[in-house]
Image (cartoon, rainbow, N blue to C red; front, side, top):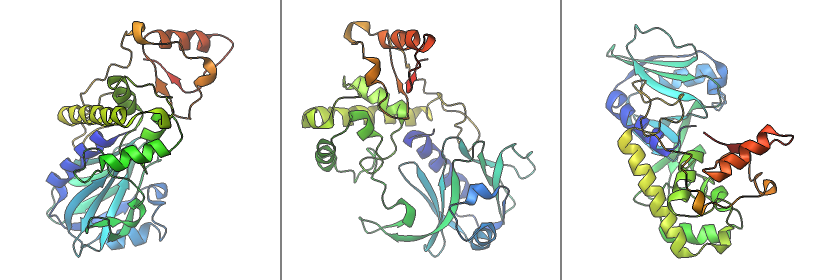
Amino acid sequence: MPELPEVEVVRRGLTAYVEGRTIAAAAVLHPRAVRRHVAGPDDLVGGLVGRTVVAVSRRGKYLWAVLDGRDLALVAHLGMSGQLVVVRPDSLDEVHLRLRVRFTDGGRELRFVDQRTFGGVALEPLVPDDAGGAIPRSVRHIARDPLDPRFDDAAFVAAVRRRRTGLKRALLDQTLVSGIGNIYADEALWRARLHWATPTERVTPARLRSLLAATREVMAAALDAGGTSFDALYVDVNGRSGYLNIDVERVEASRQRVIPPSDLAQSALGTRFEGLNCSMARRHRSGSRTLRGVACA
């Protein structure tokens, strides 16, 4: 699934290619792609045609194109496999093309491609946010991300220590901090030398600040690299994969402890183990027991 750095790379590309352009036509090619737009595909298309994109914004993993009048925005969530790409109008349709947007200048068109259709787009009203700006209604509950200049480190530390859950689960909670998914959570925890299952109330404020610093390091590196290459379904607006290759199986056996299988079912999302833990997970997986939530490279 695309995480914050990948989504930010897409936002920057959309800013370069669609900002300032007026929409001439739109076509919904799969109704599931606009299921969040409850008024239906025709209403979404009617709300787009003739409008000009004046800005492209992001909060966590959500993207939105603000339309002229600044009362509405086309909101997109990429889900597991969604891609927003800009291509020549005469380009062949992608197999999983779900939405097409053409512009009055006849230049490159915007396409939403989604193999698994877990993502989607919707036309939404903008409402005031906590900083005097505007945000789509469906995104109000999403916290700011660690790269946001308005992110409040002290508030994050206090909220995490009140949460009473595992540390990785807290990092994945988009109401606490947005934009972090499996890949970057694992990498940040490794860099901060913190175990994913550590109860949040036991982590000192200083260690949580170190974790935030590690998270920012990982995300900044990913932005510089155009995103991670881990997910083959992630591409930028030109169809290129990211090229940050995060090593998910570092051999750090001396500092790893063996985790009992009963501790591994921490969530439906997998945790990537390194060194001895991967070997242990493979042994159990190949035997009579299947360990859910274990992923090894």
